[in-house]
Structure formats: structure tokens, C-alpha cells
Length: 92
Length: 248
Ligand SMILES: [Zn+2]
Image (tube, rainbow over all chains, first blue to last red; front, side, top):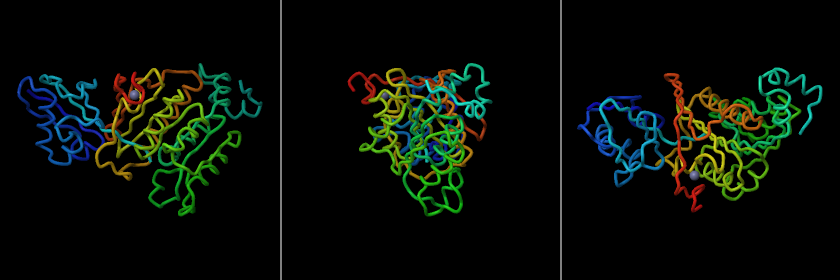
């Protein structure tokens, strides 16, 4: 199945892309989707998005079709879903 | 209620014409106080709009001396002020813009030590700080004192704004419980992008103080000026939030 990833803030910096489409196994969950994205984008992305146990960091906001997904990564994805990765930013 | 003088009625005429705002809205702004914490690329244009709108008392917390690299976005500064305290030009320029408004400059950034005192000075708080420690300290104190907190932030070509109403909406710790790893205090941004977040935040505050419109309560407004996409994301309280949750 195809899932669209949209990247914002530091995640965009780490991937160098605004968005992309990844092909995942049918019925893959968020943990599998993020691990696929991490494999593709390497250390900077991985460090930013996932903790040492591969769980989404609390400083990240992960949305599926515009709605926040639970942090555990168990959210099942479907063909055509849009996953948005947003990170905490600040002022200055 | 703070009554308007004839001069104030003339100065604020265009906004008094705004349906629903009127003279009553202006009086509410006149009687209100706001804390703007850090007054740089975000807090600068924000404080400028609050002063122009006639919020009666502004408390501005900002430490440090002006650097050349501040000038792309810190529009309350002047080119001749490099090396001198930022707070001096902030206070001077706000007073020049609107002498009817009381401006108190505090040459401090918000911390665990001073947050109670600084938040205690205002009816509403605007978080424009670069460091997450400052942001979390302000969030905790606003929840404790039951004061609304407008959260504004930017990065590169993007911005995020939400309004925290203690007891009703998620707080900053519900939304982002932790500082991002390897967060750098200096980051890419264009001044117009931070000014845009500032104006959205200023309107959130003006709406809350005047009692008009609908704030970004339980919603994060996210924008990307690269594609000019604006999006509202629903956000929820975390029952286990250490700051605003049941066990807090
Ligand atoms: Zn909370």
C-alpha cells in the first residue's frame, strides 16, 4: 500500500523533503511506517523522531489524515493515508 | 471598566468600528495587562501590535544585548543599537508608538525562579521564548495561576500557534511533553515568518481580552509559507499530564 508522508519543521530539515510517498506492507502500523522512513533517511531523522526503543518521541506530533495518532505506534495505516510529522519549535 | 478619553476614542476609531469589538472591546483592552516573554522576532512584532491596539499595560521580559544577527527579525530594534541592551529600544519604541500604554521593561528571561512574579503581573501571557526551559516554566506558572497563555513558535518557513486556557484546553506539556533532542537555540527563520506567527498570536490575545471571536483553544494552527498552507490540528489533553493532568 502507498502512504504519503508530510514533513515539517526540523523533520523537513532532516529529510530534505516536504513530502514523499512510501510503499509499505498492507496493514502496516505506525511503528513500521516510521521505521521504514527512518531506514530511508538515516541517523538525523531517526534521532529526531524516535527514541532509543524506536518509540515516537514526546517532542513529536504525529498525525494520520490530520488527526493526532497515539504515541505508541500501534495505529494501523491504510492505503492512501497521509502521515504528518511535526516537531516542537520555539521563538526567538 | 476603564473609560476611554476623547483622544483615545479618536486614536482607536478604526478598530472601534469592528463589529462586536466597539467601544466596550476597547475599554477591555485598556483595562488589561499582558506579559510578553522575549521580545525578539516573535515577541517584537507581537508587542508592537498589542501596544498599537491599546492593551493598557505591557510587561516585556527580555534579556541581552542586540546582535547584528537579530536585525533580520527583531523589528523593535534599530541598527545603531548593536551591543546595547535590547530591552531599552523595545521599551522606547513601544512608548513612541503608543504613549497611552504603560510599558514595563524587565531585563530578564523567564525562568523557574522568576516565573511566578512575572506571570503574576499580567492577565494574559504570550510565550515567544527560544528555550524550551523558559516555555515550560511559563506553561507551568500559567496553569498554576489560571492565566491564558498564547503559544507562538516558528522555524524556517513555518509557524505554530495555539492558545492555552487553563482547565479547558491542553497545555504545552500535553502537546509537547519534552524538548526535541539536540535543539539548537539559533535556528533558520525569515523575519516575516516569525512576524506572521506574532500577528496570529496578537489576535488570539486581543480576542480573548475583548471577548470576541473564537480562540485556538484545543487547536494548533500550523502554517507553511513555502506552500502557503494553513492547517488547524485538533489537540487533546493528556490525562497523565504532569502539569495540568489529574495527578498534577
Ligand atoms: Zn497538560
